[in-house]
Length: 239
Image (cartoon, rainbow, N blue to C red):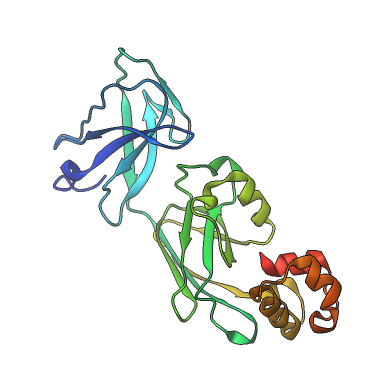
């Protein structure tokens, strides 16, 4: 677990499984904490965790409740909650590019667990990164697991934790397995290569979309510019 001198700076938080903060308790130098006034079902997480460390598990009297809402009754005392941390974390980096090698600095990279049971608002296996002006992205402090990675032009705030959204983008994502302490690099590649489509047609389709044209309009009236790409192919490029 984290060094003793940083433990008092940490906090344990109680969260509503549907989203929202409901309580917090400061960790003492002995590693104990207390959160008062709780009721309902709660998920427990840690805040102000020192760099290089991450929450590994939450157990209640020996039972793993890391990702399971824990029922708490108002006016009763719940003891035996234990948070364990690890410094065996992974780093993942890579580059995203559009056809013809143009860097995708305006894109967002979504990284999420390949296990759908680990999708949700407080998942420790979901992260987003924004590529720099060279198209390079970097994720640090990742828990060892099997992940999926995909580059998207835009997502709504918080959309990366929506299980339905992750299900939609899962089939377009690249799989990557990370071990503790591993530094791995992946190439999310070119949109044209990933979709096995002509690069020049993909580039022109991207330009048409950027100009505000709708997918049905491009499909019907810009076939000469896209090489006859159908609506599903254009939506894949748009994703």
